[in-house]
Image (cartoon, rainbow, N blue to C red; front, side, top):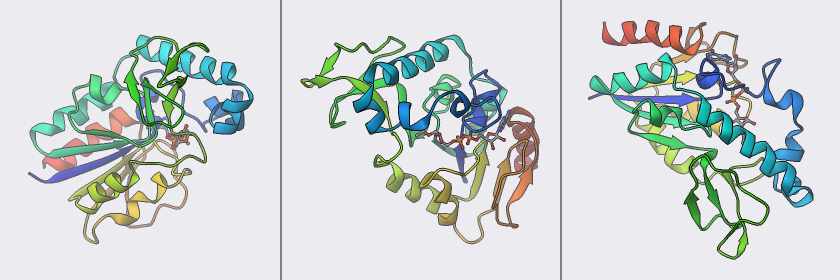
Length: 224
Ligand code: OAD
């Protein structure tokens, strides 16, 4: 089976009702990145950081995978589909995709401060007196300025791709944004996004649609 590697970002979950980060109504419009998505922000005001991720986790319990997530899961009948997601939601898994690598962490997990102990917490809130491994429990999220431990695994996956698909990411955040450059020379690359994505090389096949419609179109192309 051909390896279909899919890099997803916030736009993948937009049709499920989860806000993206950098669109006009995005999360970073109403929250300062330095306050809620850095270790410095956590040290200054852990209550605020916990509130931000507790809200995200509660919302995740309320939303459902969309048609785009389901199409990616269905493509496993025809391809060895490996998803690399920047999203911290679990919608790919809930749509039954079987190979999902989370680059930026997972909302339904928590860890200790050194990130050496990781625990499933489901959809429950993390509170200021919750501990793990004798430290305050924190969300299992890769904040800005922190290491991205899964990037080496992601690079290996992209290096072995037969087809690469990029969906719903502004490609503004590294190292994820640089993954495309590891694709083999003859590997076709598709990008699905309703808006123009900056700095895409001209050999990328652009499908200027939302995730669900764009994946319907791509599925027809791939199964032809
Ligand atoms: P962005 O918010 O930067 O980009 C979202 C992309 O999704 C944009 O290109 C939109 O045009 C597109 N989009 C919007 N609606 C869509 C739809 N229905 N279907 C498909 N695409 C759609 O989000 P990311 O690129 O994922 O990191 O952001 C990358 C990282 O920055 C995130 O993982 C997060 C953030 O700060 C951390 O929090 C560590």
